[in-house]
Length: 330
Image (cartoon, rainbow, N blue to C red; front, side, top):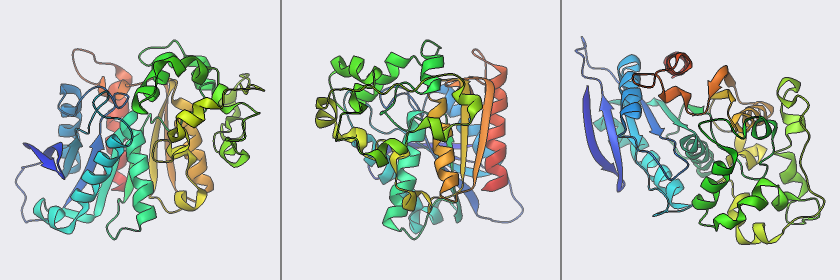
């Protein structure tokens, strides 16, 4: 394995290239990967992500680009998004694909948690831009996709479940959007989407309506939290809450219908479970092929817990199932 730390469009990346001998030159698969960490933590150079990318490169015979996008508090939305978009466009350029011997028809975009958010947002933007070279598939690992409902069934069920707690997710969003942490109680109470707020049109509410988008097995007996009166100042101060570049779940169906086939991993014990499930449903309604990979024993971040010293069975299973899907569909 040849591993190189370099820059794509000014953004630090780590590139993994398999070097096993081949009988004749051939074009490889390619994957652009964005790590998780609430847009504020972690790095593609961490041991867990390094091992994941090495496994992907070897098993897929692929060039893997692991992106170290800017992080809060030094950077805020939309900087992380722009870093993701720039590196993706750079890698997809004909010259760079040729440099790494990557087949332009076999490139995937992927990421976990906040990285899944960036991957989904980049795919949507590239569709809107009608770029010539596009990603063949997208693979989203327990992605965070919206900040308008912090009381979905998975938020209610797993609010105190490690490793991602409900108040922490609200803080991640506020840090990402460069807002005061004092707004967290309002977000957690859904005061920013109350019924009396004209700034929350019905068509936006429909895109996060889990009473329609989630199967009964996931809705269970949880009740929707929609206050009659709320705080309109939150949306006035944070218009990015309604920006599809930050919240890909809010994309128009016209855009969703043009994105590539999707793999979406969700975990039962994860506040973000329903974000992924709702997005999968919206993609299917738009005519996109979706593979839903749900783990009843899974928890947020489990896929990177696939090796010693923090090795979990579900981490190993989910990682290899994810890689297997890429191998079969890329």
